[in-house]
Length: 172
Image (tube, rainbow, N blue to C red; front, side):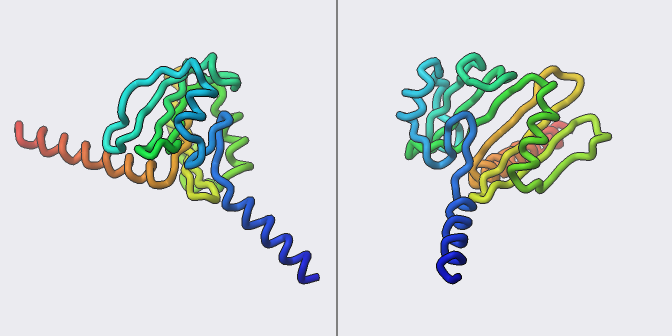
């Protein structure tokens, strides 16, 4: 009996700590070299601000998932994958949301009645999956990021907003 409990505990802990993957890329594991080998159509766009790593764009035809228009893939300065940010056709929102509901823990969601539909999930490895769709547009966003990348970007955006508000207030 103890061996069965131990086996279940080991299996559960290894599954719960498995890193989050999307489009055959695993956050915090896929290296930049592995990525470039797998996606030979990726275009280097430069260095990601405030992170020191490179980022690439992949045309949607380079990803085997219906509806992907564009993917932006970000690496940290150690060359490990920290974010995959995609634009998809908007009509995929409900299907993507149902799939994510089954796979991750929902931590935030706008009411279905709101104009902007969005949901944020967290994975067992603390990765954050974020989706958003505005009906007046034909696209939706789907972002897979490490927790550190997500929170760092959130802080950066808040700082930008504060700076803009200070600048605007100074002109009044």
